[in-house]
Image (cartoon, rainbow, N blue to C red; front, side, top):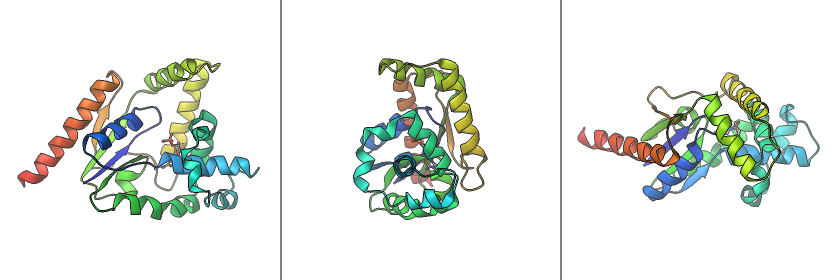
Length: 211
Ligand code: DC
């Protein structure tokens, strides 16, 4: 079974995907990490994230980098969003994601274009979203907890900018697949969001076996 999870930053999709993978005993790939590794490498190389050739050159990063917590920072998230605009980068990362999705037994993948481009025939597609304010508030709380000096309106502005870039790019923009189930987590605790996601997957599976 392939489960495709898409949605904007801080929607809860990462936690939901990990929990679904655990619940259904499937391997999990956070595809955002691949773009983050490219963004991080561009910065290490001292090159330009907005230049397609520089971004493409950063795609042959060492796989060990994917485990580096430095990839999780807001700054690297912004760089990831910038390099992800280039079709060259998206094609360079394509095979790795397809191979993961179509491995025997299936997988859970989360990202922006899993249900639309990477695995359009996934068994289950969820589009996880939440209002920009709710997402900024979550991000604000996480960063404050880590002791980072943060300003709510800067975080909200960053989230809006990232949404706008991810949704408006020409190649594989962030949008729900036509057959995706929507899960709005604005007013849900993360625990309730996970339970709803599991219920949506189970409903989809039982509809398929009824046919
Ligand atoms: O999910 P994330 O915040 O780690 O993703 C970082 C950026 O990577 C995101 O803003 C856009 C890009 N991305 C993408 O274009 N396609 C994906 N499948 C995953 C992430």
